[in-house]
Structure formats: C-alpha cells, structure tokens
Image 1: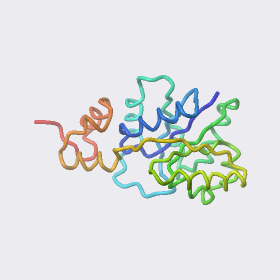
Image 2 (image 1 turned 90 degrees about the vertical axis):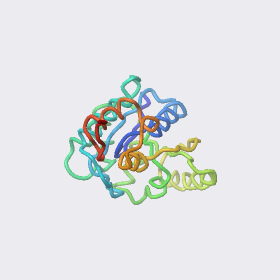
Image 3 (image 1 turned 45 degrees about the horizontal axis):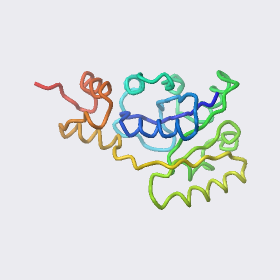
Length: 203
C-alpha cells in the first residue's frame, strides 16, 4: 500500500491543508494519507499552540468525510520532541508492507540533511515536496538530485498557491472576523465551541 505521511502542527488545520493533502494524494497515487499532528515540532517554534487533543480533534473533523485519510495520534502519544525518523520506524513496524511517502514544505526539504538521523530517514520513506512559488521548481529539482546522490528517493509535485495559513486564521479569530471560508465547517464549529485562540461565542 502506498501511504502518505502529512504531518504538521495543524494549529489550526485549514482549507489550505486540505487542498495540499488532496493534491499530494492524487499526484503520488496514494492509497491513503496519514494525517499526523505534531506534539512538539523540533524544527520550528510553535506560537499559540493549543493542546494536542484539540488539534487531533480538529484534524478528525476536517478529514472525516473521506476514508482515505487516517488521522493518527502516533506523535501525540510519544513524550518529547516529534522526530520524524522515530515516527517512520514505528509506522514500519505497524505496516511492514507499506511504502511511505513523507510530505514536507520546501523550507524543510532544503534542510533535510540537518534532520535527526537523516540517513535512516532516506531509507524509510520517499521524500516529497511541492513547488508553491513560481521560481522554486528548478531549485527543488536540483536539490532533489543532490539528495538522491546521498541515497534519497525524491518526488517533486507541482502545487497551486495556497492562500491561507494557520497564522492568518488565528489572526482573524483574534480580530473577531469570520473564519468560515478559511477552515472546514466542523473545525470552525469546534474552535467556537472550545473558545480556542481567544474565540468567543456570539451574543
């Protein structure tokens, strides 16, 4: 089975995440996609991070209509920072017959050789990245060639620009603006219900 791994803080998950997930699902001909909220991201500072339980539930609500998406708490259940190599080792133990496709942004792709146990990472999954800026495609493909000489398997996928970010969603909430066009309905309802990111129930 061809299994994608789509990880992130998802703080919160939004329509841009869904657009990316479906693009990769189709471009890589995946059988399923594991959506994995990160416990503590090792590569970046996560501001205004709500609980893992809340982020997991928002992901479940975002992807619940499509059985090809499996939302996993594999990293939330592990103490400490969420190193990708540990997640992949555990997934190989659970699904030994699967071929894994690790999806990441271009900023992460360009720093892969700085990741924890990156050589082992290349053995465990295909490295997948997308072009989200017009002038980035050549750089990505050139760098993919360098990584392949180090033993990686790489796939560069063409992506259309994503017009929404988690930071934008949180700012809209802080400003009291409507987020119904930025996140799936179930996520918007959950944020309001739990009063996440300073949201308030309407009077």
